[in-house]
Length: 116
Image (cartoon, rainbow, N blue to C red):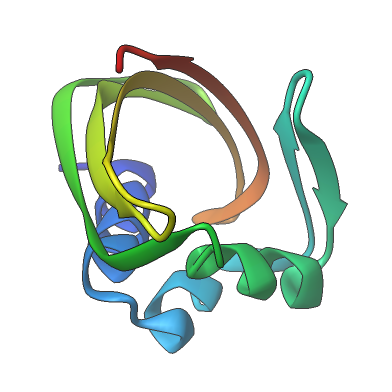
């Protein structure tokens, strides 16, 4: 596994277990996270606040179906399930595009489609 893919896997594992330090260690200081139509975050502090989103409880179940890398871009496609604080479940599919810089995530674009 390449260094970039290993970083992305470590990042996803950090989200799975709610380990803020693990997630943040995978990011550049000037990281940008975009979810078109939902949010645009800049920097580790803003990113840190989204690791455990207030709308959800417990840990998300994140499954990666495929991870593809070319140059300094890693694309991960998968599925996420999480329990909503207001009740019910989130079940969505995602495609995350990671732009890497020296083995760390410099930019992330998340495309998410809620299934139910």
